[in-house]
Image 1 (cartoon, rainbow, N blue to C red):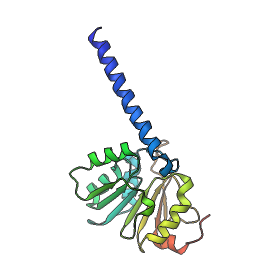
Image 2 (image 1 turned 180 degrees about the horizontal axis):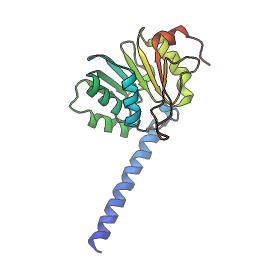
Image 3 (image 1 turned 90 degrees about the vertical axis):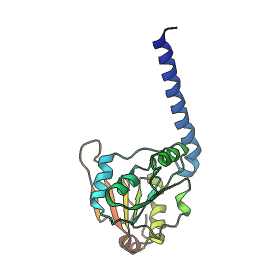
Image 4 (image 1 turned 135 degrees about the horizontal axis):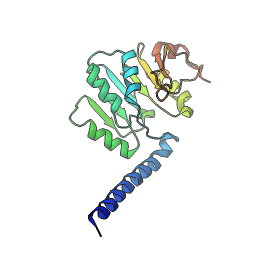
Length: 193
């Protein structure tokens, strides 16, 4: 066989293995994620959210379903915040751990965030499946301290009024980003629909 044919088979085999690892990781996490898949958030959307939610160095930002940890890395670079990310997909978790290596202020945990204590978070970022948003609203209302901010990509917290709705622009990235304050969430506790 010629060299290019061997190269093709090696490349195709490698891509197949990567795809199978993605499928296997997604299948492992599916029962806990309730159908949500690992999908990277576009940098344009993250930049818009970080612009709208200023933070101070040392503030704690928590990313629920952090994927590859890019939100935490960009927030750390921009504001000097500490970050905690929760991710159940094994492939996304490994990718996040690798990409956050050498950043002691970012802690990526392969743990279910439903049992996490969010009381110390200054900002909570989430891009979750719509079916869990009512349950998430209850958790945030119970856990967050007054003044904390919640950033939710694409899906609102049912029954709550956002302080701001961003649309970063461009047809590809124009889905809404909802920004809430903990006082607004607590003020509507029990109002979820």
